[in-house]
Image (tube, rainbow, N blue to C red):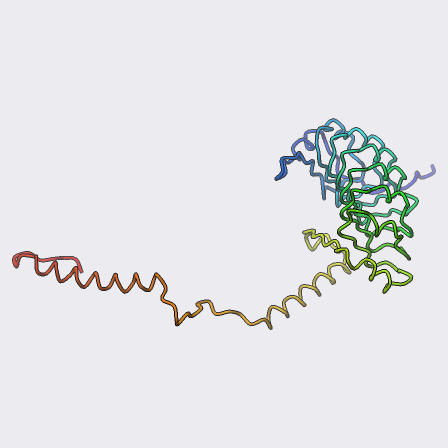
Length: 276
C-alpha cells in the first residue's frame, strides 16, 4: 500500500470557548483576541464567530496562510501576524478598510505573494514587511497615503523607490539589512526619516541560536557600558543649603530638652516617672 503524503506538524486545536477566553480589553478599550504563541498551524475557523473584535494577534505561530474569510472582520483595526510561516496573503485583506496596523514581519512572503489589494487599505498607518523575501517594492504602496511607519528591513531589496520616501506622512522607515545597490546614497535619502525601533519581549527558548547569540552579545555590550559609567553618590551633599529635615531635627532636640526641664520643675517631689 502506497504511503500518503507526509503531513506537517499537527498544531494546537483552538475551540470557540478557548478563543472567547483569549479576548482581552486593551488600555484604549479595544477588544483584542490574543492567540499568539499557541502552536497554531491552521487558521482557527471558530474565531470567525468573533467578528466583533477590533484587534487580532496570531503572531509567533506556524500559520502558512490566512483564509479569504478574514474579510468577515470588518471592525478590525489591528492585525499582528509576525513570526509565522506565511507564504501568501488573501486578496480579501484589502476589504479591511478600518485596518490601521498590519504586521507581517518574519514570514516567507515574496513580492509576488503580496496581493495588489493591499493598496486598498487607505487607513493603514503602520505596515511591517520586514524579514521576508521581498526583492522589490510594489507600486501599490504609493496609494497608502496615511502610512507613518514602514518596515522593509532584512529583505532582498536592491533599491528603495522614490515614491516610498515621498509618502506624505511617513515618519519612520527601516530598510536595514537589504543588499542596496548604493547603500550610502540610500541611507542619505532615508536619513531624515526616523527608523522603526519596535521591541518584542520573548523567552530565550523561543529564539534560534543565531538570534540568541546576537541578543546576548548586545546585553554584554550594555553591561560593559553600565560597568564603566560613574555612579552618583546615594546621598548627595549640599553644604550651602539647609534642608527642612535637618532644621526639624534640631528644633525637635531643643524642644525635648526644654520639655524635660519644664516637667522636672512642675513635678512634685513625691512623684516619680517610669518613662525614660
